[in-house]
Image (tube, rainbow, N blue to C red):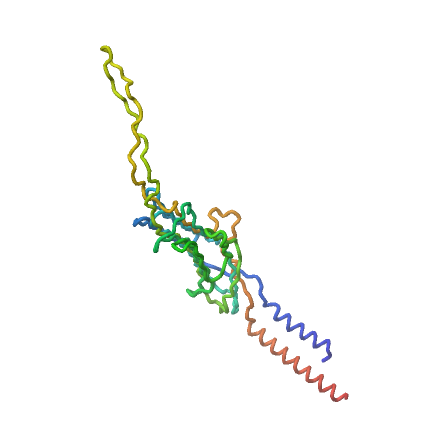
Length: 338
C-alpha cells in the first residue's frame, strides 16, 4: 500500500471516531419539586410545604411586637429557583429549602459519559443593624447562611456553603465547598455573589439506564441576641390634656380654668430593646426572575465522550491492524531495496 493509501485509511478511522464525539443531545427528564419553610419566633412555630412537578411555593411568617421572622421557597420545572430567610428579633430561626429532583434516562442506545451543566443564581447574606454595637455576651449571636448541594443518586458531587455571623467576638465568615465569591472584610456585614455556571461530569451511564440528580438550596437566618436594659430609659411624656373644671365668679360659672396638659411622667426603665434592631437575611436566586438563568433545563444533560458501538470498535481494530501491517510491509520493502 502506498503512503497515500495509508493516509486514506487513517482518515477513515478518524471519521468513524468523529461521528460519536460529543453531539449535543437533550436527554428526557422527569422532574419533582419541593419547597419547605420553617420559622420559629420567641417559641412560636410556623411551617409550610409544597410538592409538584411544575411549580411549588411555600411561605412562613411570624411576628410578635417588634419581632418577626419569615421564609419563602419556590421553584418551577423550567429550572427557576428561589430561597430566602429573614429574621429580626430576640429569638428567631427562619429556614427555607428548595429541592429540584430530576430523573434522567440514557435513551441513546449507547453507553454514554454524560455532563451536567448548571447555573448558580446570584444571592447574598447580610447581618445589619449595629447602631449601638455593644459587645455580645457569650451565647448571644445572629447568623445568616446558605447551603447548596448537588447529589447524584443520593451522593453529593458538588456543594457550597457559607455563614456570616456576629457574636461576642464580632463579625466572622466561614465557608466550605465551592467558593461563590471572595469575602470583603472591609464590609463585614455583607457577602454576595453573582450568577455563574459550572459543569460536572456524571460518569459513564449505560444504555437504557436512569439516574437521579437532586439540586438542593437552603437559606437559614437565626439568632439569639441580647437585650439592652437601659434602652430608651427616661422621663415619661406629658400627661393627657384635661378639662380644669368650672368655678363660680360673681354667681357665674367659668369653665376654662386650669385646662392644659399634666406634668411630666416619673423617670422609669424603658422597654428592653434589641442591640439596635438586629436582622439577618439570606437569599439565593432571583425572586422576580428578572433576567435570571434557570438552574438547569433538559438541555443541561449532554453527552461528553460517548462509548462507540461494538461494530465501530471492530472497524477501528481492523483499521489499526491494517496500519500496523502496512507499516511492517513498508519497512520490509525498504530493507530489501537497500
